[in-house]
Length: 605
Image 1 (cartoon, rainbow, N blue to C red):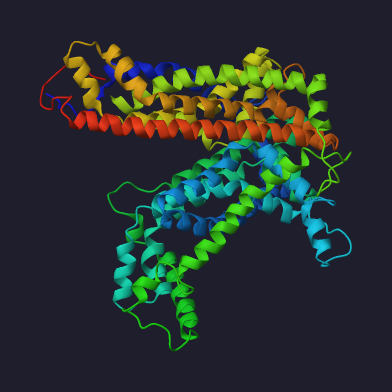
Image 2 (tube, rainbow, N blue to C red):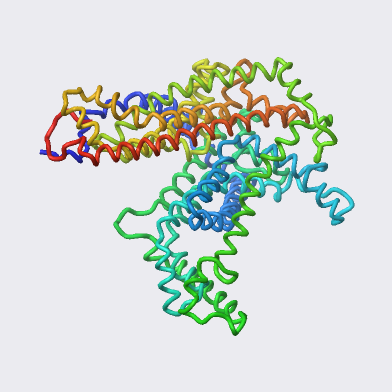
């Protein structure tokens, strides 16, 4: 007999995966398979598209440039994000919650809005040039936009949260006593950090770097807005082959190449689950790196004041925050990174109230004229209505089928569970441009291009991973003994789940719904291919306004989107705090003997 703590077989809840698998299979797997087949077959079976790609030096150069840009962005994000993650891990609970809120806030704001904000900051009359000229560093405006510098700046800004969160999760699990023990044995603060703390944080470094690198490979919006003519990326080239050249075979082959590179990177960076911690056995390359860092550290420590503290005495106390250890470094650079994350949002909010006929910072005066222009122009209102309708339908469908899939993945036990979980979460890491092109090829034949139905179906696929992650996490934190107690007293399994577990995870369901709404409302890349001219969304309307004209109305729309994102984030935080209180209450109820361990009962999830 199985014990009460074991998961049930798929006969109980495995069928709940069917709706999600149908959507993923029909709207995600089949289009990607079609694009792979198109790259091989075309009008007849041939590998000519791949031969043309590998023989074209220009496309190989652009692919190599994209990989190099992604690598540089990953390194810069690591150096910017590690001090912030360390500051988060070492801060008191209240300060940590506030800092986490500031780190998460940019994630809720559209990538298009943040990229547009950097265009404003780095423009000829933007904040950067105004500051440089006011300080007397330059008489003429500098060319800070449409080059590699602005491209790196925008991508680093967007990717920092994706590095900080995995690092913070890992750093928070490291015992500070280990570093203190090395200090008591004679190591200085720098050596203790490099020999103890840094190796133990390697899992977070690997997870953050792999995530940032893979996401950077598929970037489209930021390179297209901030990059120059010599900064064309592989994704931008694929889009050009589809929209400008109408060469579907070549675009398909290039999409498959990018998809294979992404899958290969995910496989080689996936940590092996062999029971050993990666940080305990670093590779030879890492050991060489540690030796180099230790040599530098020794050199720095030799130029310290001779009358400084002796190892083993006060050093353990000085580790937590002094001018020699990483404490001051994490504080200064951590807060600087926070300011870097929040600055574009503040600038766009200020510019939305400008009365200037063009983008100028600081604004000469304040006015609501651009908000009035938004509410009186039919094009903006029509696009907003379309986005709200599509996002609302996406939220409902994704929350329902994602919630059912979460129950099956958490409560069920069946073969292929790990594979199905990876399949359902894979739209988060697959380059969106590849998915958009695959959908475009399929929907063009089905007549779904330019329809709200096509947008909803595509956005449901993109929103499903967020719903599954949030609801699955909530289900894992629920004490099953409460649900079993309800079943003992005669409640059917479904009724026990609806009356006991569902109220407990309701805050998580609401949070997942908000994520699904924003994932659809802020989505641009798929909308560029699928929406057409009859179902134009608000992000697509903003994209056209940014690319084709300099209209300050776009700043007002961006400010409204920021306000919506902040509102949703506040609601999510309120819901999360209530969920925490609910979890405490449920734990107390279970500890007081509401459930009866040891009593066998049947029909569990």
